[in-house]
Length: 127
Image 1 (cartoon, rainbow, N blue to C red):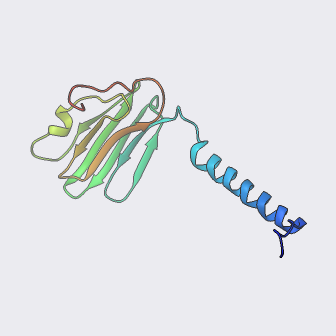
Image 2: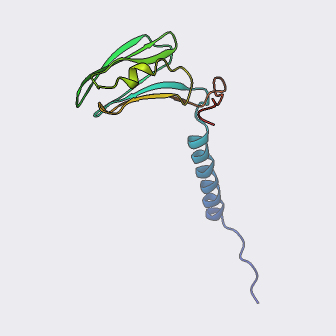
Image 3: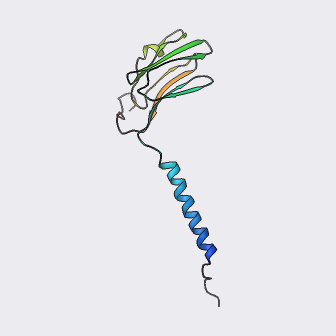
């Protein structure tokens, strides 16, 4: 009766390679910085990404005209848009992760995304 065959050097190399690949994959997926917060502006054909402390005014072309987004003083807002109801302009500033403003007729979406520890409070609307 034969027992379990002993491991050969190539077996150890395969086990080591598999373990190293698993650790590398985990670091690539879960090892990214956790405190990166960014402001995203998504238009019909393009996406802009800025740090929240940027000082920028961006004009985004859309199907009904140009929407103008301002990032200033750690806050972002849509300052003008060609849509009829102007809800996106009336929404005002956003400054915390998870907040967003959209101009649906012009297909513009402004949002703040990140996983930092600060400013992650839920508001009563999100709850």
